[in-house]
Each structure stands twice: as C-alpha cells, then as structure tokens.
Image (cartoon, rainbow, N blue to C red; front, side, top):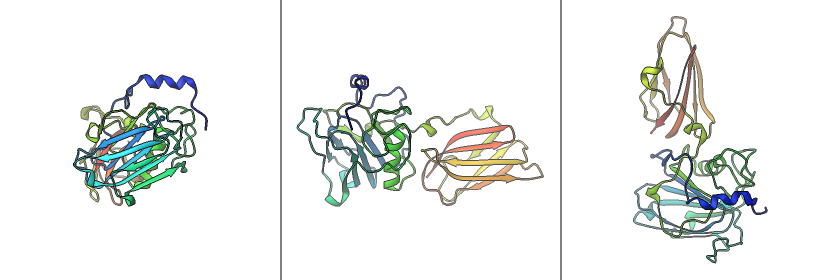
Length: 280
C-alpha cells in the first residue's frame, strides 16, 4: 500500500482526536476502547479509570509502540493491534516495529493486515489504518465502522466506550483513558432524539435491563413494526405486532440481547420513533 495522497496531509493540522462531531463517549457501560491513526508512533496509555475487563484495540499504518500503565492497568484483559505495521517511522521516534508492553503476554496480540470483519466499499478489505469518522472514501485506510466493528467482533461486544482517531502520530504526552474520544458510529449518532410531547409513541424503561421487556405505547394503529439495530446498523431484533382491537400498549422482550447501546426503530401506522436504547 502506498502513502496516502498529499491532500490528506491537512489532517496533520488537527490535534489527535479532534473532529467536527464531538461525542466524548458512545457507551459508558462498555469495556472496549479503540485508538487509530495513520502515522503510528508511541501510545502511552494511562489506565486511570476503574473499568473491569478492559479491552483495548489499536489500528495504525506505521508501526506503533504501545505502553500500558496506570493504577488500573491490572484491569486490562486484552490489547490487540490490527494494522499494517509499516517501517517508515514518520514520527521520528525510532519505532519501526509494533510492540505492546505493560500487560502479560497472553493479553497482547499483534495482527498484521488481518481481514476486516465489516465490509465497506469506502474502506480497505483488510485492517490497515484509520484516521477519521468520515463515511466517505478513506484513501486506502479503513472506515470508522470497520475499525470499531473489527474489535467489537473480536472482543464479543455490541458497543464501544469510545474511539479516538486522527491522521498524525500519537501524542507525545501520556493519554488518560478517562479523557475519552468520540463515538464515531454513524447509525447511533444519527438516531433521532425527539421531545416526549412531539411524538405519539413512548418506549420505556430506558435504560432497560438485559432480559426484561420494553413497553411501547402508541395511538391506535392496529399494526406495529419494531426493529433494534446495533451500533454498526445491523438489525439484531425485529418483530411485527398486529391487533384488530386497536391495541395501544405493547410489551417487547429483550431476550437474547447483550448489554450495549442500540437504536430502537418503531413504526405504528403514520407514527415513527427512532431513539437510542441503553441495555445494561
């Protein structure tokens, strides 16, 4: 893979993690965090927050040196690198091969150019690099959906805590995981959050517990179409409910769903509701 086109060097003017859409966290109950860039470098992560079973994913084109430390470093159960592992040392730090330190050997994993788990025509079919939350062509790198989707798949998660991404080298200072990043997941970011009085559909409780049910109240519609989508926009639950008696209250079970953030999409006649649903 060749170096990205010169037009992409405009990202060098932006600080690591800067983006037009700033959503510090996607799901604060998630234990998966992701860092990505193009230039690699040295990523010093301070695990300063008590997040049990913390899993960390990193994607870069050039090699990265990943150092884990901090008061809760013992919570880390996985540190996975998935990228190109280039040797150009664009950061001038002497980093020409990816390494991971600060965690036991069984915890770390360095995967060179592995297949992406999310197909996206705007991104590479293999895990190479990531530098933005844009959904457009990534100049040979991966889209944010592919970066986050890869680690969600590998770590068995339905959501991420945050994704911190940009083009240039990792920052020279230590990065506190408590500083977060962005959600960087288009389907959830674009979910409509209406005011309660502006729609004729209610869904509660929200947050909801794994295994319980969500109650939906509507005006008489006779038919209700319900979908739940995960943070990658994949439909994980769908049902159509019919009632000839013009029923206005419905109970939808959350059986089989893992904890995470979902988009609840409800159609009842001409009524529609799209909203985030937190399952914990």
